[in-house]
Image 1 (cartoon, helix red, strand yellow):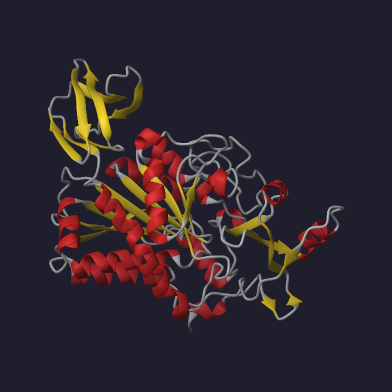
Image 2: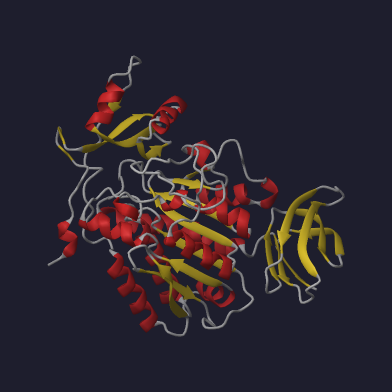
Length: 445
């Protein structure tokens, strides 16, 4: 029996007949975003081209909205809550895929379980590099898909990345350079338990499967956990944050991997909205522009025609997210990319949208490889007396970034172009003044 065929669509619109839950579309205004968020309704996506916002609502929730004294306009887009095509991948198919890739390209790939899910499933990652079984002093890029179980297009992008890099190695000059000079880690499907439940029980399932109600893994990371009304204490809410920071084994597995590999860049793929999100998730925080996070986010957005910004600017406050934790705890420059639009929903037609989506998103992740060649300080400190790097604009005695040197002595500081005073500090110090950073600067001490 094809176990995907057992799915029960919990949210389905068929003509004008509404089932238990439905996708409802509203005008995109700040007041509408606030209203939906404050009532813990399931906001599913936004569209900045048509200025609309969508939510998955029960009939009871829609009745509450209808009862508002202020008239709220809404509509019912068709088929956005349908069960996904069976061509999308389940956890077993993800494992089969990466094992097949490894069998075909054993010299440049390594398969690793980064940990076990709540139900005991392996969370698989694949490493791609020329000396793949050696921990080289090279910059690392991490890409992951499917923190949220219903976002079935995201593993298509991560597996496409794996296929593209492995099949073009030795044939395409750019790909060969990336694989030779970078350690690339891809987690094609992070929320394996939730995805299994999405296929077998509830096509709109989002969280993991903790106690039957689930925890939103992307509200479970330690930084900012429960800090700005960007998640819920209600177990029934789609953004339920869990009982404590990093309470979930999946979250812990991701945290352990990031601590081990120290990526320079990370992309976490989600759906849907066609936006690029960078830290921070809570209003009114923004990232320092000196660290180039906003610049690179805008560059990615331009390449794939997605709108860039923080979560609180584009969507709503979001606390306990993976990119905020990576950015603060491990100096990663991270992004959430929400693929597909409100006209596609969580489960777009596979044959119509799969290839179109992965092709559109390739320039986004490829830009991070190119950006490693751009303005940055990279190298290795052999002397353990140096522990941190402090960076100031040239001639200005104000630190704009403090970078903690990695345990192996390596450092990869991404900057915007400019002139800097750079101080290596620890039990002794060394200062480099008026260093012009217009491309990759290699420094060894």
